Image (cartoon, rainbow, N blue to C red):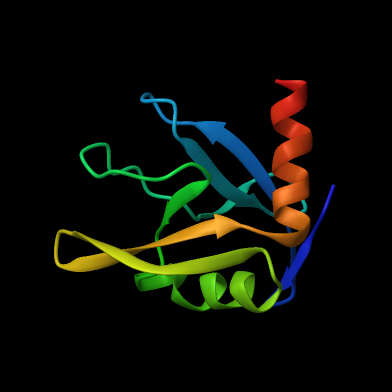
Length: 107
């Protein structure tokens, strides 16, 4: 299991699925409690293979920047409007991509 050190917390990824089959990503704290929901589901907007909508606004702004700096997320340069803000389209990279592949094979 990989961990991200963020603001004094060791956070681990937990992958799930939204109702439409798209990947959901949360970060859990050391007690396995949800710390942050990283993805957002925008079912009416298209994604290419391997892309994910990332909630990089409000309370997630700094943590998403940390995920990018850690090499876990790579922005594609594309954004999608949702309400009054923008979701960033990213791909999982580095340790997060390897973890996702491993979890996906076991599912």
